[in-house]
Image 1: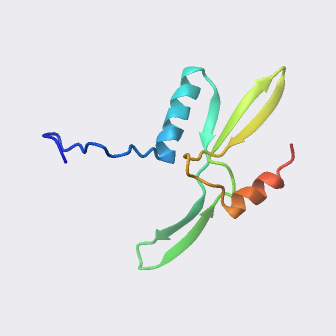
Image 2: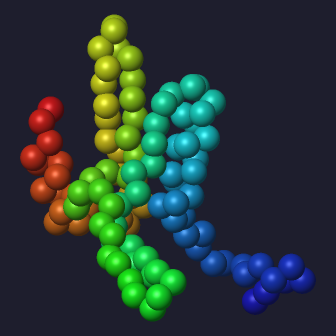
Length: 102
């Protein structure tokens, strides 16, 4: 049943990956950590003449976020893959993780 504001009672709150990422970004900004959101996937770009191109961004399975740290003068890059409680790694993400040197 909805109340006067249109909110539903007894409905589970679903947390999305993008909301988790935003929280991570706010935290990194607060503590001044350099990071970037790694956009990946396939995009269709249409030109002004009725044609289109397919553009692939990033490698299959790459993590959502990269973090750059300075640890005792060494540059360290860490990849973070963000998942919800029910989220699971794709086959490409598992492959990327296994073949990334540690």
